[in-house]
Length: 245
Length: 78
Image (cartoon, rainbow over all chains, first blue to last red; front, side, top):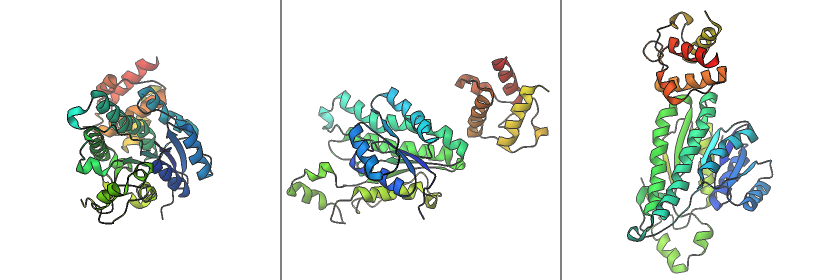
């Protein structure tokens, strides 16, 4: 049902928890997956777990010259890019009154500007192929806001708005552009929370548990598949009911 | 009819799915041949590949008709 055989995917942030599961799930559905991230060792581990030939394309997305080499490198390695998953993201949390310009700029650069450059770069191939899938991993924070994350919220809301505008432009070419907004997902970061912090978070989640990276990855496979061909400009909320939108 | 014009016409006919007779010197891609703004971008991309040239954005905007395209590409490839 969600067969991606013959499709070629590029996943950014594939060394991290959610990105790694997205890459694994796309590969399990049959896609060839190019892995991008900053930590080569972690990317190699992901490739090993996948067990298929995965191009490894290290890139620091805060540097635009590295961003702009990424899609050409993926196209050279795989012959094209049919599926782009903009998953890479970072945080530099601070209260507004204390937020430094660099904290704002760094987060916008990686979470939003890099995604813009990558989206623009894959369009030519997708327009010619008359098929494409662009998926942005946003956040519930981009939809709901969160104190201490003005920069992150702006970047993640920006991703949703950008993807909607692009979805309009390319819908007639069978290219869909969607976003996924995960809520609290179990990760190395949430493992460090103490019981009190964890209980406070879970009290806001009707499902009563954290989500898993696999649950985000499954949504990515769905949106990349032909089953989701008529879904575009959508934001899929994967949050255990904490924000029913 | 020049070789350039034939090659441009072939791209326009294929891309916009129009009859070759309609692709006249003064035919506007958008007003006469049913192109939208995205079609126009794609036509320029196709011209770039067919003729192995780069068409800068300001030049691309000036290419509104079949005649414009032939003139630009004739000059660019001469």
